[in-house]
Structure formats: C-alpha cells, structure tokens
Image 1: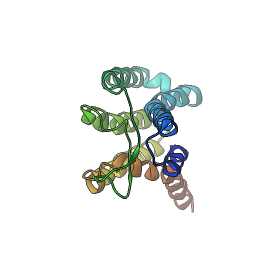
Image 2: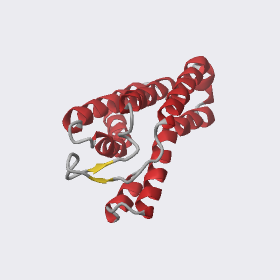
Image 3: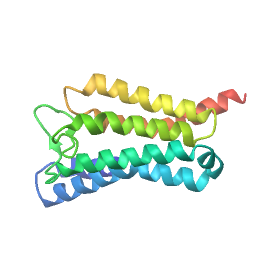
Length: 171
C-alpha cells in the first residue's frame, strides 16, 4: 500500500496513471482481509479448524459489505491532495457514498480475523494494536480525510512492535 501511495505522490495530477494507481490501491486495500483469511487458512490450520465458523462468518460478512460498498464506488476518480486533506493524500476510493460502512467495517474485520486466526498471545496484541491505531488515526485525521492513509503507516510498525514485545518477554 505504501508503494502505491509513493507512486500517487509522484503523480499528484488527475490523469490516467493516477486513476489506474487509485484502482490498484483500492483493490489492494479491499483484498487485505481476504489475504489474511487465506494466510490463516494456509499457515494456521489448527486455529482455523477450531474457529472455522467464526472466521468464515466474518469473511462472508466482509465480502457482502464490500460488495454493497463497491456498488457506488465507480468511477473511482483521482487520489490527490485536496484542500481538506492537505498536506496528505485523500484516497479517492475511500470517500464515496456512505464511506462509514467501509470505515467501520475494515478495521473491525481485520481485528476479529487476527484475534481468531493468530496464536496466543499475539492474537490479542496485534488485534488490539490494530484497532487502537485505527482509533487514534481516525480521531486525529478524520477532518482531513486522511486517516486511512496514515493508519497504513501504523500497520507497517505493528509486526516490529510484536517482535519487540516477544523479545522483551523472553529476556
């Protein structure tokens, strides 16, 4: 996602390249919970089997909500710095009709999948960090319509934080 943002920053004009990158960014963002589901299914079969109904149910709910959201998504348009979002990018795919549906659904779905699909105690650490970082980003950057973009930066550091917690725990 950060790579897509980099390319959007290097092309902060409304042209075909920006629109294409916006489509790719939306796709990457929207499939993240599905990829997490597949990772859990592949790497953590024991937990998946134990929590199969919960994990499958949450994915089905996500897909239904995503379809509802995507009905009003196209045309995606350009991602750029707007007077509201300045100095940050405003994702074009995030502020269409009824963005609250995706805004609330996305981090909650990720948190639940992490909680039921990852090993203890990491499941609790990562899911709490996920939702807390979202809440902080939302509170600070909601008015600028840039919280999704900035929340992605938290996601980069979550695995490092878990590794640090694990390192200090084993000392």
